Image (cartoon, rainbow, N blue to C red; front, side, top):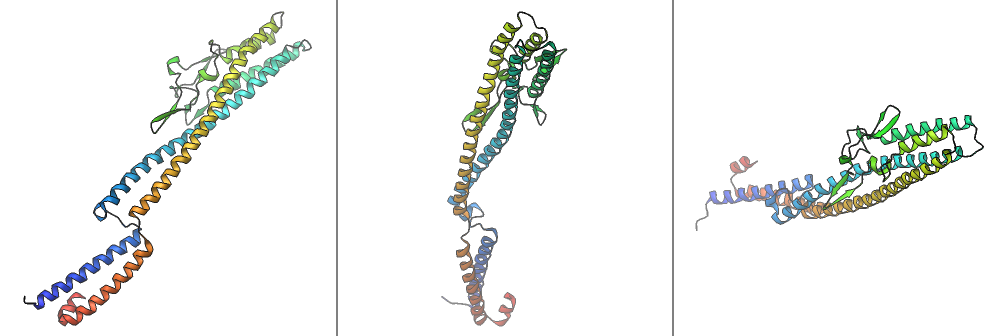
Length: 301
């Protein structure tokens, strides 16, 4: 086989071109921190990393939804604790009013404070977050309670008495509290109706007042028990979501570590290879300069 000057030149140029491409590839790995930038670089690693990145996107969405839900639970917790305090105060006042030592003026003062507490409960029932009523069930755009003359009635339709749920993985976490859960007894009485009767009994003392107060305090106890039960449920739900949030975050971190191992650049090795390739290129250029005519070397430069 006859070796021509043209063959030598083409082989030398091809070797230099390959070395420059390798150096460019290593340079990109060093600058981007990625060993695999396209599927053809490593199909298996690219496929696995693509799956894990997709999984992380889903998990990060779950994490954001959990954070948003937990912020709503803070509002539930605050509102229910306020209800708890208000109901305890109502009991204290009505028991005090039933005492025979109270004068008519004392009872009027107690009745006035009960009216203020009723208005406080009205405001709690219509608590909003970003324009949405947290006790509205499936009708978060509708005030859960409304005033009708001197009466406060539940405004949320019965069919909207649905607790909010958070879908996670293959389960739904129920976290909502509706106006029916804590402002209404199982028999259908509302805390506002109970308060109206208590106020009437305090203002209009008669021989049946103490009996009526005792009966209505029993209904108020049922409301208070429901508030306590839902407060406990909100707390346990928040604990569960916090645990799930941390678990998802650990999985995301673990997936990220695996992704970095699959497609990430070993910076020490890449820098060493880059330096080696740089030396190889310089040596190839010097060797080529000795083999090829000066005019061709000038053209390469």
